[in-house]
Length: 307
Image (tube, rainbow, N blue to C red; front, top):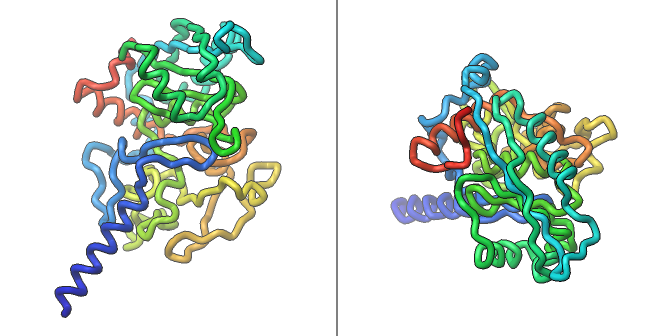
């Protein structure tokens, strides 16, 4: 009987882990496949391919990288539009990206802007958009491709963007110059949501004391140790005041009260208000650069180039 109980318990834990990493997450802001980075683990076994460093000197040690960007404006079939993607807007987006990723020694270069006249994807479902682009518009692996349709119909038009291939992402026209853009590029370059696995039985614990037996920041949440454990704040914006300060009393899976700083609320990879999202942490920058390094060692991410 004890053996049967152990087997059932193991199955329950395994099922819980799978639930915490559903293939795609759709909660208004963006869509992202967490399994493409690193599977959530019930036991805390840090990935040896990452240092988990938060030392600014480590971040500064990485050489400069260049990422060429091709923008794709989406218009109706007759070429008309309600808000066209122009060179000036693309340049504005590049400036935003360069400001956001400057501390990581990554420079984005505006390579080209292309226009697609196709009413079928001008204002449509996010999934339909991706499938249509993949089927009808070929791209090389040498550039980061950013698609800017007018709107997505998902979630009553609240879906703002998503990463859907190693070098393709989309943001709707309302968000080409907001924190949504660095958020999606962050996913392309290996970053997770700060609230990853927040509702799982093996959620990220609040402690940041590595000597505490409950410490699991290296293998839960976003696997970055200088971002605090974070709840899903989408739909809970009333818990954030006008100064981007968290005023809630939400608890994690262990019943621990979340301890969020203003920087956690302002993090690009969090689900918070547009006006708040403005920073990456040192730890996120190091993990991102290590993700790029690890990927390039495997022959991936050919759109990321050395200076």
